[in-house]
Image 1: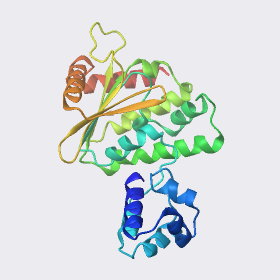
Image 2 (image 1 turned 90 degrees about the horizontal axis):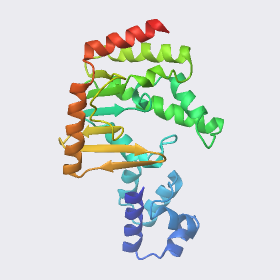
Image 3 (image 1 turned 180 degrees about the horizontal axis):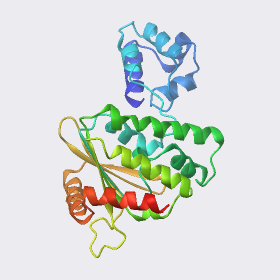
Image 4 (image 1 turned 45 degrees about the vertical axis):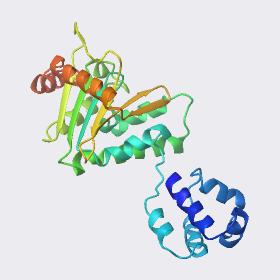
Length: 261
């Protein structure tokens, strides 16, 4: 949206129009134009078409507008990472608080949203749920992307949402783990050494083979591109892979937990 707004401003100025003059030509208020240009507001289709005509019909605005999309239900700080996920060659996730979004069932995700504070309205819950389920299509639609998950055993022991929800969740993860591009490892509750005590992390390899990291806290998220910092997190993830249960033992533990429910 910021990039699109910059294109609008550049073409407007190239056409010799002030914001007031431009607003009159496109039939929108100066306030709307002042919100679109810095990327604070999503332009509607009419504004794009009228702005195109007002700036010489170069085609730049219509083509740029094709790359604009709303992402209801995704936190603002997470949207950039969500876009990067769609092109990832590899995606590694370590989570100690809950089952990560890509592996959640609808019932498990709904439980998290219903219990969120401050409370969410029904429409907000539904928007977040649909956004999360939509992201999960990546697991099956991108069979050439390697997904690796390290999860703490205790996120299942907690039984978030109750026994029925946990049982369905474990079945779902066992099904996903049968896919060739998905690896799931469990970190046992009793572990004398642990490289992930600093908290959850995600690592991503882009199509041009650059690595990025993402860490998240309370109402915040940080995308990390600094190679040195990313390298440190890669080192920790690699160590956790050796500390966690093997793939076979992890699935065996999940099956035993499922049988005990």
